[in-house]
Image (cartoon, rainbow, N blue to C red; front, side, top):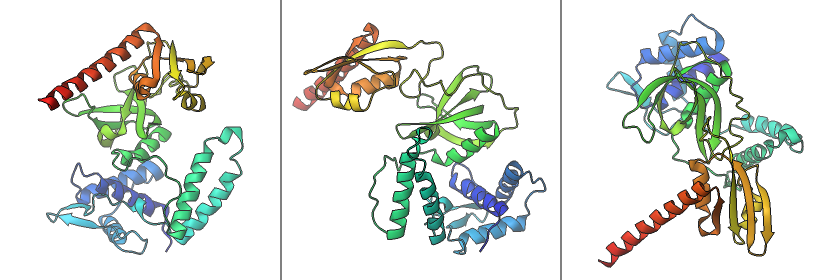
Length: 342
């Protein structure tokens, strides 16, 4: 059964609404959301009728498109998914889908050897594995890093479209340190993944510096009607001098010298800590390397992750900070041992 583009936009919009369980959704709310989505993506300003959205809900509930969406009505007024984990984006691939994906994979594989398409290797392997798993109904043979419980991924599409279309968004956001959520307008410029978490970079309205916000701390996203503000920051260079996502615009990169013993040396050689990494010394006991980076939380966590196999030689203040953190950690272990003995 053919489905036109407008209908797909409505289905996707209804799906996004019902997955957002931070607020209740009436039929009027869904009508308004679909009308705004069609205006945003297709420029259609005549709105959506009540009957159209009702028929969309019925279609999503049926198996005509393979959705079988568990849409229920609570208190005879509010629409939601009975299964909080459900999404129409999670439905199984059809034979036609698999055929098209196979064609896409064959095209992408032709570019895998080109310098400008290095990133395609992992993407093609993921697609091939997904198609193989779906076709044969067998277990996946490639286990990519993932976090099944990660929150905020439902906002990826919304933010991605906002960046492409240069549209501001209104975020309700609560950082780990904040006691309560805060709502503000954000002008988004870039999405970034780091250690299987997603972040959006942008300017908060009224603030000059770029903010880095974790998607798993976002509680709600709404459309903003403020005028979009461009940035003069070169985002292709923004993360050049850092490990992770914490950037201090007023801090210069420093030369960090690290000594790694022979147990961890092969890992650091084959997977450099940073693109600026250089080997200063190499011997039977290990290696000494240098990197040019800003000093931030992610750098410290990277160093601590190597445990006793890595030590900081310079700068002195980074060495002292790592030392103090290790001493405090040892103090906690001593306290635990004393309690156990008691």
